[in-house]
Image (cartoon, rainbow, N blue to C red; front, side, top):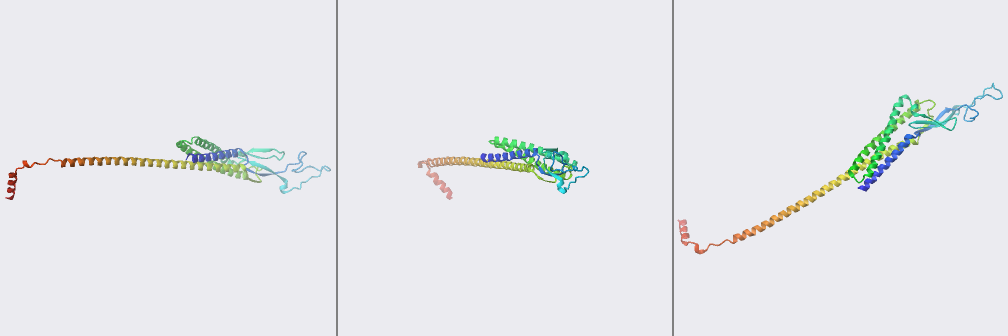
Length: 298
């Protein structure tokens, strides 16, 4: 029982640990959504001679205007961007650096409340995961005490389930806020195309590990309770059987003792009755006997 219970505790702790690591990584990174943005090409200059539009004048005749024959998507640049819960970063078209803006400022005013609720839920999700992980570690340390282990298992399961529910709600709310921001966000930020990034996948992997840890903890709690009750029932049944055997032996011994005593009393009484003194013939009066017989005949 101790070995299997310890294995279940180790599995729960491992799943909770991975859920905690994945959630923290997803929370602090900015790759929930990645894609490209379409921005107009900048004007050509001495420092930038490619991926630009030349609006310069003709060097031989300054009065002649130089036209650009680029049309459609050729007039735009496609820069990469990646967005997280806190920030959205995109390539700088003027150099090789990145520009980052707060995603809270990019979200529409109608979605800011839901975004803040998503942020609070994500933080509570991590805090409850940490509490559940601490309780599971305590259960692993105090695995020899079954009663304390059951209490720790119960609390760890409750905190882990609550954290999983909060994490799911937070992920769904952020997804909705991002989709609305794609449609109603600032024009210079709206993505041309986008997909979910590895941070988003890691967040849902964290949720999956969290649910696995909660199910494993509940399973461990249930199995421990069932095994404990079975052992207690077996112990009580063995005690009842032992008491019944002792009672049966006691009454059997008493009955044998009573039978032996009665056997001892009966022969003594029969011997006494057989040993009564006979009446001597000399003491009998024959005339009295004849007289009594004559009276009976009359």
